[in-house]
Amino acid sequence: MLALQCCGDIMRQFLTALIIFALGLPAIAETRKTLRSDGVRGVCLGCEDRGDRSVDQIRALRTTVGGDQSYKDIYRYNYNKQKDRKVAEVCSNFATDSGYGPLGRHVMNILNEREYPNLFDGTPDLVSLCPAFPQLGPEEKKVVFVAIMNVMALGESTCGAGPHTARGPNGTAVGLLQLHRGKEGSYESDHRHGHGPEIGCKNGDGEKPESSLKCGLHLLDMQFAGKGELFSRSSHWEVLRPQGRKQKFKWTKKIVSGLSVCK
Image (tube, rainbow, N blue to C red; front, side):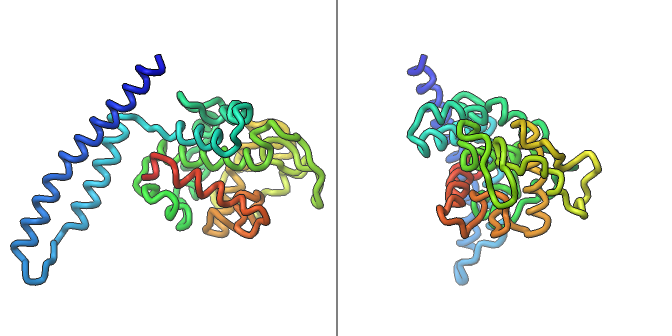
């Protein structure tokens, strides 16, 4: 069964590469034609626009032929990061080598452009890690945030396998994303950035993974709106703070830049 799956992956990759090559031929021919017609300056008028269209075609083709393989990228990151199959199994709540886990699907189900508009807009530092982000559709953008929430959970609680509470200067941190127990509602900003009253964080959200993720996405959306950055010195999570002593923000950079959907 494993051999058949491997052969299937190789065949999809081969077909994708073959069709991408075929799509590129007309663009190459057009570029040469234009260069010959304006050989003195060597300027290819309109090549940038054609290149952009070619990139979009290639990305769409990759998704159509091979499907989005980013869940495998997330799974491999979890396993390679920890070198521990038990940790990878716990983090498989976000992604496995065959699809998204229950928490990964939960993130994709609750994310929407009305409630989290700033996440879908992105930030310059996010785009630098995921160059394709501005061209991605809503469902593809959700994949990026599954990866980000995955690495946040990995850094804070080893995806839930680590201690569920920790004492800190601002109270007791609890749960998957180590939110402050009984104070989650205080994260809410006076300015909701367009959010309705049903959106945001409520006291007790840190006790359950699903509500932790919902609150975490809200906080990240507010960070995008207020700071315009994925990585912020004032972020709630160490994996998003570039000044962190352990430099865990590099975990986030690696997992996002490694996503198939971002390339």
